[in-house]
View (cartoon, rainbow, N blue to C red):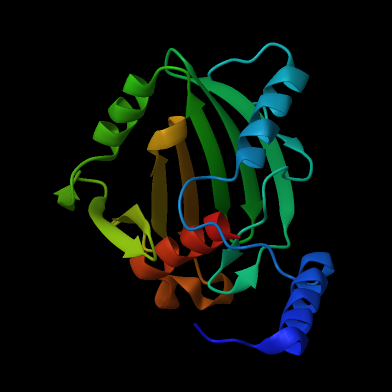
Length: 207
């Protein structure tokens, strides 16, 4: 056992008191799951909307969730916000910015089985040619999170490439989608990729 003496004990105790009183300590980053306040915002938006259908009615408003940063640059365009139902037990909150055209969608299901159906609809990793577009889906790990990213290319329309990144919050039967439509805006069509989409969503969730 190492004895620090009376002076060491007093200094150590004082340091603990000061650290406990300091308001400068940053909150720890979230490495898994979704901020519970996001779900509170979803519930509040659904309640405020009154009657909610399966198609969101978007209106100009501030997004009650955080604003994404796309490739390190926070979005500053107009924001449209709305809510809708999804499936038999889900509700979702949609925030939409432009430019670049970006959607942040938070969904939560009362029935966890519907989260599994949503996971199945996203599909397995690999490439799929749907005739009008080519989809490439992969799972990318960022920190402690596994995110599913789908890159969609439109051979008949090369003006944009779409990146959809999903995070499945199994604990809360929730789902977060960040969808970025890359165009010549900020040169994203050339510089953005699936890894960046995953990192953008992970950074948003960790914040």
